[in-house]
Length: 336
Length: 243
Ligand SMILES: Nc1ncnc2c1ncn2[C@@H]1O[C@H](COP(=O)(O)OP(=O)(O)OP(=O)(O)O)[C@@H](O)[C@H]1O
Ligand SMILES: [Mg+2]
Image (cartoon, rainbow over all chains, first blue to last red; front, top):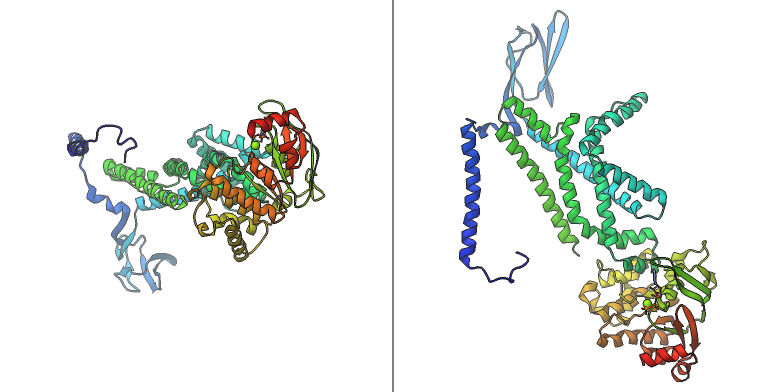
């Protein structure tokens, strides 16, 4: 449990009972303070409204947008297609397969008439945002590891071009705020890259990828330093033993040094990746609808900031906690 | 087998130091050469120059006629032929004993896992530690670790074995088991260069003894010569201190 147990007189059972109670009382006190304070500003808690932002369940009433004749109703495996003809002009409405159509072919509809209804069940805004956050973070973590290991190896190379390139990259990235880097990637690099892509007749790269790029390159610089420290923490006798068996530098790195370094750098890596998940909340500024931006949008339409921001924080907590459990598991397995 | 000609080595950090001064030595196949000398005399440095863990600054070192200081020489190939045993064992802690012995056979010698494991077990048996093949190095005693390290080097079927104070890090009661393994190896005709302070080993096993001091080879001779009628004052002084 604690590191220094046994250096002082053993604590009696009353000691633990008392301080555990103190903890629970403090916790309850804090929660009731929040509740009382929110009552004081007349905040109405409406937790029951929150689930819909997670998973949307609603009955949608489809109304005609134009006046005309319902020319055809076609049903196939995954959709129901309604065609309404207005003065020779056709309007097509595509509804889900299970939609219930209230009219039959040939009926005449006026604008605003209810023509069909269906039940909709899909992920809500917050779940969408959570998914984007997860996706962005995972891709950035993967690229960050690759970039970081490569840079870390360059950082300790004897080749000046490689070493100086690594140092320049690391210092540049660590020396400016992530938010500024995101702007640079999106508004500066993005303009150039999209210009080139358009010149080649390709579409623009979506903002999400600029976000991933910014995060991966940011994380890569930190991972590189962690990897370098990890490699240098492996006793040099290991490299000498491996090389004197006839292994090349790359083989010795792969088989002997990196596996040992990997074990030692797992805890700092975990910390770095948890930071990355949290930093992905900055991507809202370049129109990536990740969890924070999604929450902000919902808050402004629902006017329930307390519940939603608390929920948002809890969702991040779930992600980061899952990651740290995962890495702890890896660590335990890598212990050998 | 090995021929070192006027080998010089300098260190510049932390200060300039002429660590090897015109060291020349020829070692025939099957010969056991023991290198002795006071601390800091350059014994380890010389040994490490022989498989280029240190790059000699001047002179020539030939391994079976191949000049290992030649930039065109494939050092990895040479090193596979030259086993090295360190004072601090340097076993790979993330691998089991067997894995330690098998790894280089597969990556360098391109043996199949089956062949490599068979050879590995054979050698672990030879150094008397076969029953421990599944454990990790930190679960072994120092003497056991050093024997595994010897087996790991032997697994490459080297032509020469270099030992750098293989028993100096061991508790006294474990020195014997390692020296026994080395003695057996010498009896089988392995070419060996051994840096050690174990004078008993030098007397019994060595074909020749080399005395180094201050980066120079001061005296070379048979064990009888050394232990009965050393020539140099420095040699006499050293032997009187150590015996
Ligand atoms: N990598 C190095 N950098 C700088 N100086 C070194 C290095 N390796 C050895 N030296 C120096 O070179 C000299 C010879 O060292 P060496 O290790 O060869 O001595 P040794 O005879 O093996 O001594 P010992 O019996 O203590 O092992 C010493 O003065 C040592 O400080
Ligand atoms: Mg030494």
